[in-house]
Image (cartoon, rainbow, N blue to C red; front, side, top):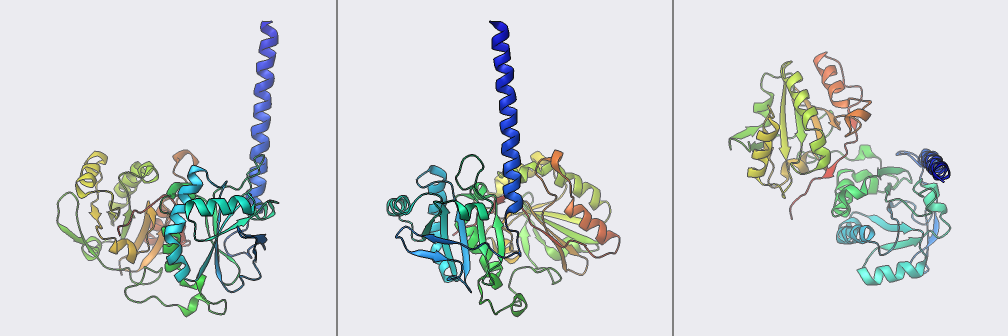
Length: 374
């Protein structure tokens, strides 16, 4: 009897391993087939909650936001719907057509819209072809993963958010902020990015002078300016951080190590906390606990975060000694040190110190959304 039970356990374990492997293979295949930023968006032809048909062809020349989600009425999907609903007015004003997309039928969508007061359109992908084309159909489950695509007015994928779960309560606001920071995405298809030149008060742009600022040091209360940070330095690194974000906190030791290494080589470091949910006292205590060797400044009204178009924590910026922004993005490619394969921030700093141009001036940052006020 014991041998039979043992055989059964071994068989069950083997089956689980095979199933996991099969799932991983299927998931990798789906992700590999998903459209990438800059490629043509897959077409769609689907009914909404009222039975009206919507197609990519009919949306030609418009910016389109496709918020794929698992199922009507579930807790996470309801939170996402509320966030997107609150930002819908702003997105619409920016010229963005908003669609929620899941595999439920129009009747289910209609009920969800009525119950939650959803103002935007829900598309019924009952045959699951659209979800599969966008690489979001969960293998073996048959529902869409929570991923959002933004298609530009030129019909190409402009932005992909694969970490919607990381900012469910603010996702709609964050997407609207992204569109504001990338006006060409929602402009007429005949208008190119080159047609837009940032004003002096606009967001930071690679190759342009970095926006100046003066913010209080959270531990001393003394004002710190961008100019004072960069005086007699070869470069300045700005790190938008959070005391509560698990992604930002996963980088605390790496940020400290980078600051220690490059400060000795003539690079200035400063952290900026723009989260309205985190007080100056909380940040000051956090700085002491982490034993950071660089100041953390408080951006109470989000003006600096807005000027730099910073949206997540951690998000980094490198400014050369002439005050020009030369790198914007992530520290490295993974919050788990064991999975890190690329070191974008240190690579950028090594290039600066060697007097060479930064080969990759932008690398998409990831983390928790900055909790802005108002």
